[in-house]
View 1: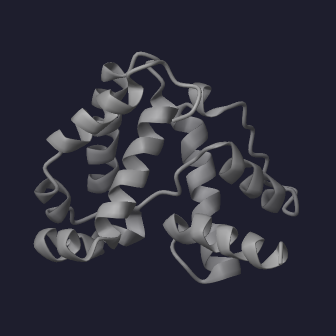
View 2 (view 1 turned 180 degrees about the horizontal axis):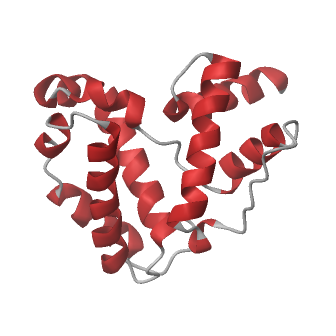
Length: 158
């Protein structure tokens, strides 16, 4: 959350503590998941001083991924069924990696400015491409791309 106004982290933490993970346990479709995620994104955006939709979405995506990967939370709230719906948290490094991959496909043009100005429609374009790229190139869900990229960069640097 670098570059955000003072108090942003405390505001985000307070909001995340208010989320009832049981709401995500009841998700039965991607549309239902996206609607719930959109609702939380708007509410968190309204709480943030920056009013950045992109920052709110990134925070929620990281939180939900961590909740799914946490053994006790996953077990208590049956969160593994939402893994296939989780988004890749978008930020400058992840957008850059996706744009680089997309350049190989001339039909794809992913425009990126920064996280602060990320809109729902631009996010949707990135997420759709991330899903396809994750399956075709790495045989994984898009939420795992960041881990894959981090690990492959680590190996490249040795």
